[in-house]
Image (cartoon, rainbow, N blue to C red; front, top):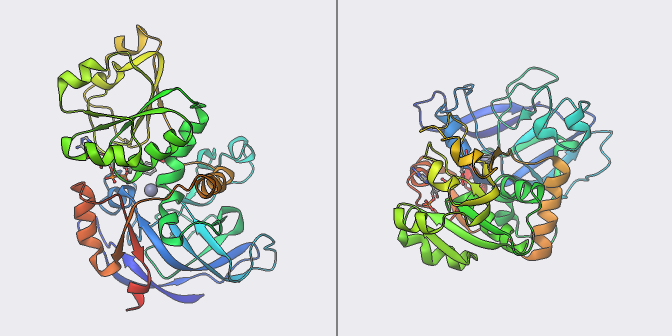
Length: 350
Ligand code: NDP
Ligand code: ZN
């Protein structure tokens, strides 16, 4: 065991505060990592505040982790000390079920071990995330950061990136497809870039006219202000795919109506009951599909990093001093960040 420090919430209503704790000594297949940067995902806020009802305290968030390898276990073959690596939302899975064997560890039949607030499969301890100076993870759940990528702006690819890339890939988005991205936050702004790189004609749905110009700068061909019923109605029957990153309950019906027949509405933001209810006529009468997607497997997480390096795709980040993490949470909830906070872990040592 060795000493570590990080920021954790002690309860659903407590702000994050510094906490000393211990990381395990590397097991045979483990990589020990000095964390340099960690992105701030809206999921971190949902979890710290127990908005999904599955939090375990103390809860140390952080699953967009980038750092340097400081030690490796005896059986590690893929990484060596000094390598630049990343860790995303999972740190383990059963490794033998149908999903794991299909490189879909996120859908492990036993449930993957999350990077934080999850029970370690070996010793039963509760996992602590990346708002900290170090982490120890099995090499199977570590990815390599391509040389070409800036380390800080690569961090959000580990969650915001893979979560938007994976469904677009799964549904085979191709040149000419009409794709709508719902919400332009951390996930949404990456969704625009990926859909564009896949050749789609991309439309941003945003609540505010104020973000229209920004949306175009991110690569959107068109912008629809979702609060304007006229603009929504004018888009009826238009889209092949909608990628929905909105983090709160919202009426899906007006969005479903913008899909053409066989169109697919993919939820990634909402992990709550759909409210108000979906009117099934919006599905039935056009053979539309309402779908969901969760992050991506480890092989695909490496793939998206390589895709970003190849296509020159990066996240737009605002560097954060970890001492300001609670203000940052407030700003994320208010939609006041362009488009991802990334903690500079040097500030933890300060
Ligand atoms: P952000 O807060 O950065 O972005 C969400 C965007 O949604 C906002 O920028 C805003 O866009 C829009 N939005 C926010 N509030 C509302 C509202 N009340 N009504 C309508 N639109 C709203 O969040 P992230 O991008 O980090 O995460 C998005 C969601 O995805 C979160 O719920 C997160 O937990 C989830 N998530 C899911 C994953 C998965 O595997 N499925 C993985 C990672 C995250 P605008 O201002 O343009 O309208
Ligand atoms: Zn996330």
